[in-house]
Each structure stands twice: as structure tokens, then as C-alpha cells.
Length: 562
Image: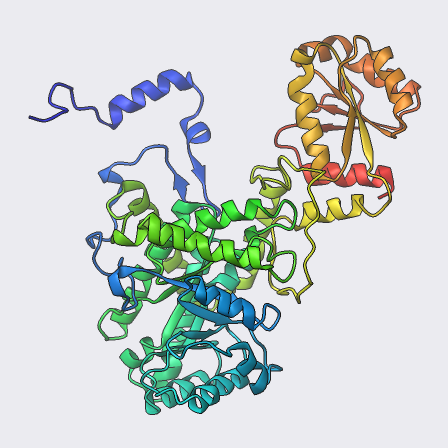
């Protein structure tokens, strides 16, 4: 007996009828549909009719992991450098990490590499982050000196697939019989950290992968062997559905490329790293939540290896707690939540399947344009500007930075590191304001001229205090004043040059203009009003939901002389 047997079948038409009753004439597309920065429309409801793309079965190639891993588990790959040191490497391996990724440059000597890997078992995969050719030879020399058989060596050289020497490196690796060592890394995550959309990251990585195959083909290397020496790196962000769909789309796209090259559609090896652009220096503990969501999405999306950035990585060299939390987040998701026990967990979900279709189509179209000579950097800059506008208006809120900032949060101090010149962290503009506000011995303040009872003004008073705190400015006053004159008198005693009038629309009709005038007469040179702009009130500026919070805060900073 069917549990649904006593109910009439409902379809999209019946659902739309109910939705229209609730919307009461408001446009459906404006209220219930939003678009990604690639222009992909995210609908409020999906059915089987929305998935008309690739007919591959969920749980089958190209949606399964590309690496040969036991039990289908992903590899927990921890990132280290000379700054973190050997002790941290050993702690991670002792705590359950499967592999080590080394971020070292050409100035790292053979002796420094040996010291960094002292005590690391030969069975541990050592992956070089995209770096120098010198580091590759140091690693090979270290393996040889430790008596690691070439067929037993595990890891990757991390070479840039656009490097003219990469084809020669592939040939050497094949000739020297390193069957378990990857040669090159297509680093799509670097594009994401510059501001690329999901489709731009996919298209750019696809273009680099094709350039790699062309170079290997010209060098006379079998394409199937060349493809087997390649890994793709993608950024995992806080939008779990977009991350899952992006990884699934990447597999489908690469299968299409390899098939077009005349070889068996090859599974794409994927290394997901938590997006550097989403990390914050302020309230860094929130990063633990961001990276947990990103890790879950990467695992559910089928990544072969995952690297989580420690919560304090945007501040400087991560401390032992940051490294341990990053490692254990993966272990909890894998060993206790058993996410790896489900093959293609999002397969068959109409929303994810539709999103995968849309990203695949958008990325393939852009890839074809890149092959025809289009410029990707200019498009990435445009995407970054659009996302930055969303951050500035708080349409894209950053918890602990642009929303719900804690002015009294304890300082987190870490040894500094050389920052990635290409990384564009979304929180930086707000963090710069916080830094400027903390230069002096005392915190700058602004007065909240709240009118009426608490129940009347509290919504806009709270909104204003939150916005001011995002710029490092402490709100004072705000208890509520019965008359504009009382508010002006309280402002005069506050000692701050800024005042923000806060109350309801009804109160504004009666007292907004009077309150602004009273504050001016009391000597206030900069009066803001919490609400939509209205020339009747005569304020110097207006703050409200959807306003450019960065512009408003910068104007306040200028008035405060910060």
C-alpha cells in the first residue's frame, strides 16, 4: 500500500497557484528566484523536468572519484611550509592526516626539505604545491637518498601545466617509472581566489588542462599516460550546493575533453581546497564554520583529496590549534559522519543535477570562447567587482566582519607570512576600516539619537549599531529620547561629532526633520538617518538595508579623521 495513495497528486501548476496567492501580485522572478554571478537562475522548486542535460547515471562515471582509494574515502591532505615546521607535520600525521602538501619555494634548500620531512614515513604521499622546479629535484633526491623505490614513491610534483618544461617532466617521470607520482596541477582555485565565478574557474581550468595535453602530445607522450599524471585543484566555498555542482560539472567537462582527444574518458583527479577568498582575519573563529561547510560540500561533491585552511591562516602562521581543528574537521566528517560511504550523494537530486547542467553548459561555452582567444582575466576582474558590490551592500554578508561584528573580540596574533599577491579576500575592505579605527588610543564613537520607546526604535537602532561596528565604530546612546531636544542635548554631552537618528517611519513623519535640525543647532556637523533617503528630513546621509555600507562607513571615517 502506498503511503501517498490517499492523496491527490500535485504538480507544478497547483504549486504555482498557491504561490501566486501568497505573492499577491509581486513578481515571482524577483521574489523567489535569484541568480549566481554566472547568471544561473536558482529556482525555489525543482522537479525531474528541470534536469534535461547529461543522461549519465548518478553514482557512475564521471561522477565518481578519480583516484584509486580504498573504500572510496577521500584523502585528508594537510598543508605545511617551513613556517609551520617539522613538529607540526609529524603532529598532523600522528593525528590522522593521510598526506602532506608542502608550500615551499625555490629558495628552500635540499637540507631544509630533509629537515621538514624528518621522521615522515616513506609511505606518506608528499605533494608539492604549485612551485619551483628546484623543489621537485630536491624531493626526488630525498626519495633516492632514503632508498624509496620509484614504484613506491607517493605524491606529486605540483608543476604548472602551462610550464613549457612540463611535458619533459612527464616524460622523465614515465621513463623513471614513478607510477604513483603526479606531475602537474591545474590550479583552478587560484582563479577563484582572484574572484572567478564557478563557470570561470571551470573554463579556466579546462583551458589549462587542454594546454597540458597539447604540450604532451607535441612531445610524443601518450595522452592517456599524460592525463594520468594530472590533478585538478578547485576552491570549495560556503555555498555547498554550488561547490557540489561545480565538482560534478568539472568531472563531466574533463570526460568530454578526454573523449574528444580520442582516449577513454578519464576520471578527473580532484583536490578541493577551502577558498582563501572567504577567510577572515576578524572573528577568525567563524572560519571554522565556513571551512566545515566547504569540506562537507567537497566531500559530497566527490573530491579525491581535501585540504582545509586553519581558521587563523588569514592572520599568519597557523598555531597548533588551528592545524588540529582543520585536520579533525575532515576526520569527523569522514570517520564519524561517514560521508565517504555514499557514492555520489547528490546524484539524482533535481536541484544539484540542474545546477550541474547549468554550470557545465556555461563553462563549456566560456571555454570555447577562451580557445578562440577571449581574455579570462578581464572577466574575472568583472566578477570580482560584482561580488565586491554584494559585500559592500551586505547582500553577501560576512559574519563577524560586515554583520554581527564583535568590537571586543580578543586579538589573535600570529607570526606573519608572505601573502599571496593574487588572493582577494572578500573581508579586506571592512577589515581595513576596523584597522584604521584602532590606530588611536581610544575607539571612535557615534551617537544614536533614538526617538521614542524602545519597541519603536530598536530595529533601526540595532541595525545602526551593527553597521557602525563593521567599521570599528562604537555606538553610544540609543536608549530612546522623547523629544528631538532631549536627543540633541544628549548628543552634546556625548563628545562625538557624529549622530544617527533612529526610529520608525511613523515617528519620522512627525519628528525626523525637527530632530536633524535640533542636532545641527546643537553643533553636530554630520547627521545621518537610519532609513531610506528622503530630502524632507535634511540629513547628511542615510543608512538602510541594501545601502553601500562601505561607502557610508568610509564617509564616517573621513568625518572622524581616521
